[in-house]
Amino acid sequence: MKDYDQYDAVGLAALVAARKVGAEELLQAARERLERWNPVLNAVTVDGMGYAEQALRGGLPDGPFTGVPFLLKDLGAACPGLPATDGSRFNAPEPPRHTDSIVRRFLASGLVIAGRTNSPEYGLTTTTEPVRHGPTRNPWNLAFSAGGSSGGAAAAVAAGIVPAAHASDGGGSIRIPASSCGLFGLKPTRGRISSAPLYGESWSGFSTSHVISRSVRDSAAFLDILHGPEPGDPYAAPPPFRPFAEEVGAPPGVLRIALTTEPFTGAPVDPQVAANARDAAALCRDLGHTVEEAAPPVDGAAFGEAVADIIAVHTATLVAWLESMRGREAGPDDLEPWTLTIAEQGRGVSSVRFQTAIEHVHRIGRALGAFFEGFDLILSPVQAVETPKLGWVDMQQPPDLFRERIFRTVGFTALFNATGCPAMSAPLHWSEDGVPQGTQFAAPLGREDVLIRLAAQLEEARPWGRKRPPDPVEGSAP
Image 1 (tube, rainbow, N blue to C red):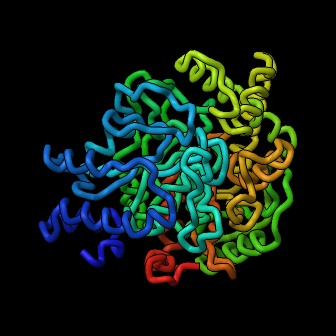
Image 2: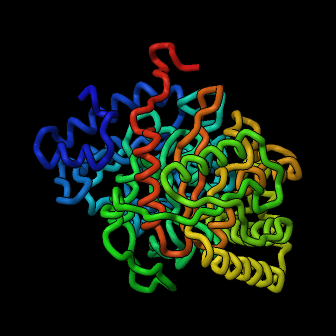
């Protein structure tokens, strides 16, 4: 199937349903793309082809994505028979015996899971360069980062190995790789997608899962199969007004959009990414929306400190659990320097300080909610820096340098993790190096419908779906 990579997941599923192509043919096409691209990109780190072939032999359920090849992130997403490394040399020694809710829903939709994509150690950075597996390279320019922590997922989708891939986002880890690889990435509202069965929430509600895709309609269709609570969830997002897929192409109306080019962490911003955001604002005005410069009141230093404390405590808890599983303390041969540093920081955060941090981000959420009473969306860059080269932000760096650079990469994204609001990255720009740079739009809690309507409008106005990176085998890759 030579035109395999020209279809999105919805399109491939339609071919299977019409019996114009079989699931075996699609898996073979994915295998061929994997063999062509992965030696260059290092996007897929766990081979699941045997797992996929077994699923085909057992028969696939009849669902909206029956027969479509798919990849899970190599972080979480427990699935017996397809082990995860979490990008770490110190990952849990025992494979999971349960299946996460999100994986059950992927499988029930008929997807053919064929492996796992590279992730930095425990998702703790915005590039994908773990010591355990090595760096994932950006398909558009191999010297550049594919983003993180879902960098392997984004690289695999951009290279056409699969049309969409599982991703998760605790500070920007869907939106940043989507931005870096020229794809569409939507982080859902807190509580939209369950973390069952082991967790009620991840990173105090900062983190959630969804997919990275090429098309807006794929993202919406995946949200339709994934949303909704599981028994015992501590909270859930409000149900949608109608299926998310029906929002694709629906008129968005005249949206009131706030433009900001100042990162919420107080970090400096590159002039080019600010210019890209203003260009996106001009596009929105051309589409009939109103745009004005405005931003919610956020004390960048206090916000950054609160977020750092919350993530540090969760990392310390994770490391303590891993040490109990392994029966020994973790050292530099087990965990990367930044993981050890932030775990040590977390052990020093008192219960009072941790609760103070939680209450601080909740107050910011209240202020953001009030701000959204005057606006439908917030438009900004995705990162405060242009898509960086590999090694620019690295978990091996001295802590002060790493903190300074990570705060620049999450300067616009982390606010919407802390407050739980949905946000998306739309691929509207490419740099002189040929590397993509996305634009972020964020909406009030529960309003993914508004994001999807606008995203479909942007996709039509500035089509990105047919753009492809250079082929590495033919020698045209940078």
